[in-house]
Image (cartoon, rainbow, N blue to C red; front, side, top):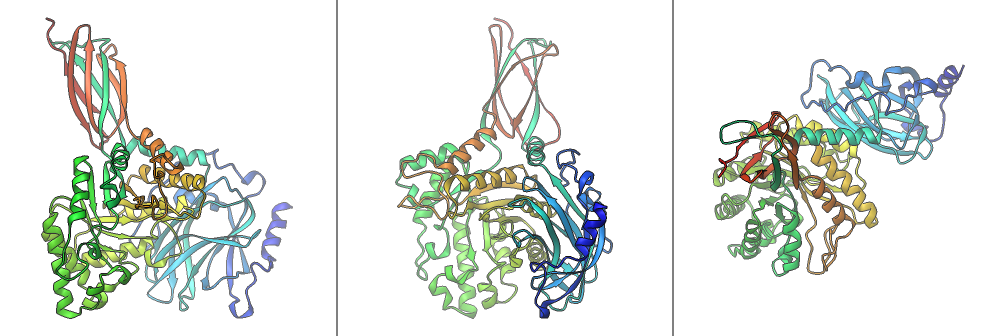
Length: 578
């Protein structure tokens, strides 16, 4: 029998790819997933909708599995299988006939036996090429169940793969898994879920009702609607090179309604020497942004990386350093009070701790509280890298981010904004969505603040990856804005990714941006009123101009569309006939 044969093969699995050195040998339980014959259903056949649920709290009992376990519901248990990798191991799944064209969403509840807390990774290993990738991470405790959510796509089809769990903690003797789920989606399903979310969260249904001067409905009136502004902030970094470059300004202003300064607000730029402040360039950039009616993010007040801390600040200690940082906040935010919608208060503090190391663990709390007093209208953000980009950086996992926010809250800081930089290599899109799901449970503004794709890829591949990231971010209900990290320097180069060449002809990444900007706005809606005197349409959130024409009569108006589940009803009355 074929199924029996597969069970025997799994139990006797002894490939060198899975056998560790004797000192690493660790027997683990193995669950065999039988995706054979009639059980291997196509991902697109069942019409399952993506489940955005996630949890950041540790629970006494795990919730039921998403998708009723997905394809893991047919799992069978096999024991005495060894694996080759560092760390401690626990339940694993052997997966057969995995497709490279399929998007896999994974989730489970995890608990450890041993230390109080430990990071647990879920990883997928393909046996054909021994390639392993991290697909999800959770900060797990020994007294309750933590939710791990992630996902993956494979670079190539795999006849046999192993999905297993790992912790770097040497004292974690057991990893327990409950309510595990693996749900496959076809690319068409995944794209459709994004489009559905865009319709739900970035657009709104509108009903324009036209009446004559007596209040009677008008049938056959011509309705024309033009979008004036876009609600969703979509922008890019700029630098001082844009100031004397009129073509650059025109190219930028035509596209973006948000901006962030690449370096010009950083402490080393505004005060390179103690007491020698210079905000000239930052003032000019702000004037340029405001003249275009765009919003500006404040980046940043402090950068925790010592490499980017002003040299003179590194030499300060104790009360001198405390006075310097207090002066920095007061000077910066009093000068620009009300000008910047956000401030990145502590940049990359999940990875670096220059100020807390010098001033104590409450330093960041003091920074936030002082900044809030200085500019109560600005939303205060943490901002860090590798939160959505990679799964292996435990310093910046979603749970690490949540844990840091909760520490600040316990110190009296109000949760305000989550900044995710987004400096991507090859993006793992289902992992990106899973992280956004998890952080979205905090109900805070989430911004993708520094999006780019590594220049190690050719321009077309770079553009394709960028499109995937931007579509995922725009569609996700928890994302409130997107910023690209594409400031052009004097030599027409960028940090990793440029949108245009020095003549402002689009590169492939720029073509992607223009294509999406075209998709994500309602340039014009045209129609005529029906037998009830109404014209119905769906439009992206923002400000609109409305014109109604009937015979020789005309009426005009404006309206705005903000996020709501309700249809927007607009009543227009035509003037009396002359």
